[in-house]
Structure formats: C-alpha cells, structure tokens
Figure 1 (cartoon, rainbow, N blue to C red):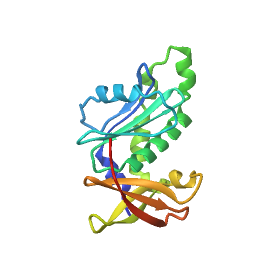
Figure 2 (cartoon, one colour):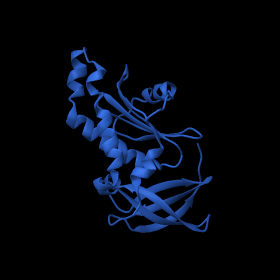
Figure 3 (cartoon, helix red, strand yellow):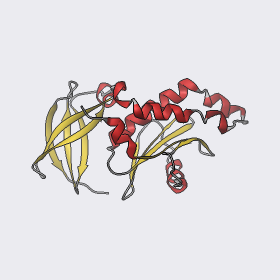
Length: 197
C-alpha cells in the first residue's frame, strides 16, 4: 500500500485566502520561504470550482476558488497534481466544519489568529491521509517509456464523473499519455497525446 503521508511530507505550503488577505497558511516546521508572488498569480484567476495547476520548474501548485475562499497547495515535483487536489478537498471540508469563515469575513472584523489552531488539523490530515481513502493508485502502461507508471487519482474525480470512461492526461518526462478510467478504476485504454502550451 502506498504511504501517502510520506509523499505529502514534500509539501511546501497550504494557503487559504480571500482576494484581499491570507486567512490561514501552513508551512512545514522551520520553513521560512515566502510564496506571496505565487499566491498573487493564483488570485488573478476569478473562475470558481475548477482546479488549476501551475508547474513552476521545481514546484507544483494547485488551487481552487470555492465561494469567497481560495485554497492553494504547493509541493515539490514528487507530489502528483491529483494528490494535491485531494488534499485541498479534504482541507476545505475540515476548515469549513471547524470555522464559519464566510460569516466572519462578511462582518469585516475578522482576525486571522482565530484560525491558527488549524495547523494541528493540517498535521492530522497529512499523517492520517491513508485512512481517509480518498485517492487510489492506478498502474498505467506508458508506451513511450516502455514501463508501468503509478498514477494517483482522487476518488471524487471518478465518482463524480458524468460519463465513463473518464479521461485523464498524465504528463511524464516530456510527453503525455491519455488514460481512460472506468467507474471501477480499471484502465480502459491509454493513448499517447501531443502537448502544447
């Protein structure tokens, strides 16, 4: 079994923000890095309820805007985007269960120190990530590398699909494959696809 909590030790930060200010930020112990420029780029995207990925050389960043809050997670390149998305989904649920931030913000006198204790929740989510059973590792053949790749897929991606099989693009070592995944998490086909950007 894959130990996702070990993979998630590669996280650089988790941030929850509005367009105006940071509500909450978690970083690994003894990290003094700042991600202000990355967060400013994230805030420029007004689209809600869609995950966006930023690949920044040695770092991957995933973000989503849900209502008035923007959830962002950054890691080194060892963490797959689907795992970061699953982490953000779990963080957003836990955060909204613990705090009614939308109401606090609407009153205009919100003090971010009231959410500092959420650091413990983040640590618990990372350490206990496997028990949540929200991702699945699939083995996908790559015809370019002539190998089988472990691809992490969040279960909500498959369970909430409108039709099957669900297409998923995986970029790997300068090329990409398109995987077709059915509702039982079986691979129904793999194709080599071209990339542009």
